[in-house]
View 1 (cartoon, rainbow, N blue to C red):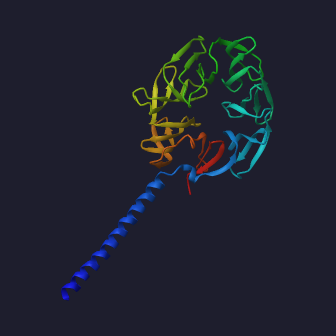
View 2: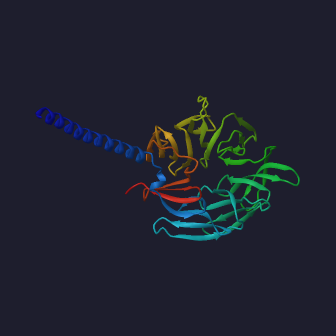
View 3: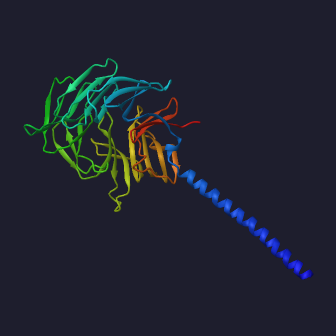
Length: 350
């Protein structure tokens, strides 16, 4: 009898210990899973939506300006960084846009229509709302300086294709060079213009560099993604496919000096959604799997040091949540950007 009691007691204690240990293991597994999920969350979980149907934003005089569609109309709007108030300031003369670039001072914007049969471009001065309509055969355009633009002209009636430049009002026109290529995007620098063919999934495999001094064209046998010139210089910020990676899954973000050919490495990752020059010539960018992190980073071009503004471990941006038009407003420590035509802000401090 005593032996049965002892055996029963041992079984009872064993069951209790097993339950305790099993509960501890289960709780530990749940804790690890929660930590892993939290670490892998998209930064979009921490954002605040400002506006929908937004295609382009930029910073000017402590306000963010942008283009958004309401009904059938596209308008330029302003977003007050202090009051968070949004106001439409100028209606655009076309329904859809395919290209928008700002002047070096950010006080003017050049917008091109995206509707077939409605090829039209317009330049608008923000302070005065003064506007200049562009020739309907201008397919792509950007800023040489505050008062001059360079553009790709394609006359479908005559078959004339060329790169030209002029004042924003159309005066002082000059043809730079005739070209045979179609679908060209232009990225001007001080003495050069980068010509990029139509991208395939965000990558350009047809890059040419036009020298404005001798009007020569040089082919680049590389695949580029991001192309961001620094106005007034011959330095350009680019992401390009790493030629040493046979799997084609690694991109390098670099600053290239077109005068010397010097390349300054910034970061390496699986993908860079966007990058931009700041006023102090530092670089703000968003990337996936950058030093095993994904998020927003700041590169100091003086010290060559990279710091993280916001990142998630074990998280990689996908095509669904890749940000564009990224802006960092240091006064309120907030990032602003567009994802899938939604204008977001991401506060970096509680």
